[in-house]
Length: 293
Image 1 (tube, rainbow, N blue to C red):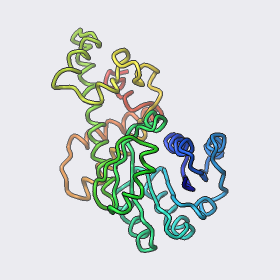
Image 2 (spheres, rainbow, N blue to C red; image 1 turned 45 degrees about the vertical axis):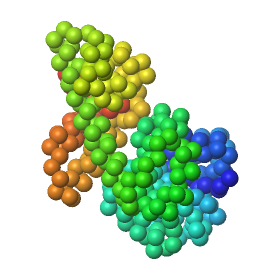
Image 3 (tube, rainbow, N blue to C red; image 1 turned 90 degrees about the vertical axis):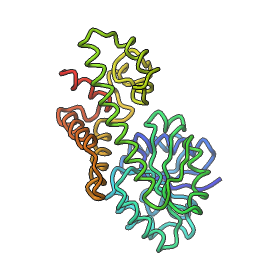
């Protein structure tokens, strides 16, 4: 089994690290949050006092961090300078493509194999090890990373070179954000037309309007018992995180000259949701804003 340094033990990183421990790897953990770090230690991880200490002699370094600036700082100022020669670097954060490619370039110049491997599947997927990993990197780096990713996820897809994992993630989550709005609007229209939510679900889920946001994550209580709508919108994926991803999609659209009018409008609506105080709720809670509540 491998010695793995895991940096970033939040809502996603914590359960991902726990699954690596279940696979009998030695996990050396670091997080700025003492509570998050203590939770990982309780599950069997070894506490590190710094990133440098965590990555020393590690076979694999895995990170799950909030934004591109954090990834750049962690890798450029700590990991690359202190990781063992030949260590594999895996960044699972969702960040901008430019930062992912810059860090991958710096890692390659220092002689490290690295992949960007953002995830889809939320906290539930992280806990159940059913995440989808969208991976960017060389074929050789992907081959090294895949066995570890398979112990944290179910679907592992090589999307292309460095940064392409992030590109796939930002496109996927733009679709998710837009489709959740469409489903929410349809259910609120149906409500005002006198349609029962379950009846509408039964029709649409087996018709041309069906999508993941409906079938797996229906934003109204009732039809999908496991959706956040049935637990007062306690998050699987917060509104703040969706806004972050929608803004990443719009940054990418501007940088490439892509036309994303629905993505732009969706970003504004999630911004409204966050600004009204619902940042910590699940992103599907946007149905309440659409309903006028």
